[in-house]
Length: 353
Image (tube, one colour):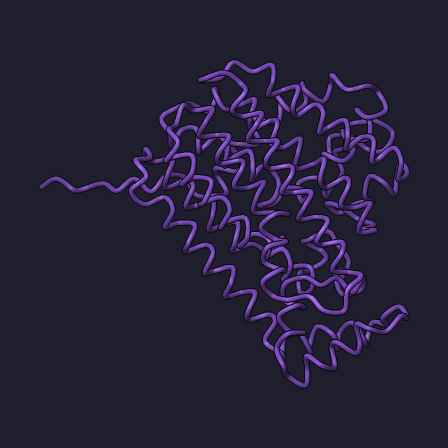
């Protein structure tokens, strides 16, 4: 008797490793085209070199990856395959998405004052604010250069325009995130809209670019983009949870890093809008001007949890994961790439870094 074989694709971790192996050589080749100062900073930021430009083979090198690294480029490659194309066709788009993502990280670390990135000092800490900003600018310019020079189905114009749209949304989301730090009142709905721009747009855009590069039709591009947007929101909610309760040894960031800056991340905003006594005490703590002590940071985390902020963010992550997976149903996508997209989405939500 024959046995029906259901192809569920490769596990998410295996897909990430595959993506890194394929994309990193192209990424290195692109970065090598940058002027020497920008090349040195970005090589450090990517974890390829130390601050002196020497290959970095430190004992924690392997820990600088995780679900975040190569996640977006893996979505590009898989979306191209799901639409009937090949990973090779989508390589310029995958490279461009990684460049844009890392442009945003270099700038985010400056804007947020984050001292560490991937278990070592952030680029601006090592090289200075101005050089780090310029290196980020160089990565953004390089991303469009890579796309513009690519030969793709229908020409590169579609992917360039799609990436431009993503960047407008990303900047808008980041602007909203910064404005939240200056405001006493932030609503849950606008917190979600901020996350849609800051994170959902780029991850949705990665899927759209991959689909376009792979020759997919408009309906497939829309569905894949919707999948990516929901997964991006889930990814951001998990990031917000890790920013408070993540293990510093795993995340590479100090304990309670977001609370120290009084950042209004999703769990915080949910707690502040909970109408509970704990939420009110958190509001009073956040309104203070002095640097929060270790005891106050621990108290803030406890208040957020008891006010329901942690549970709300966890539930939101799961809901958006479910909604994202639903976008892939009946989209005419090829397997096993569709199954691997699903696996990748799950590993992005169920992660510890």
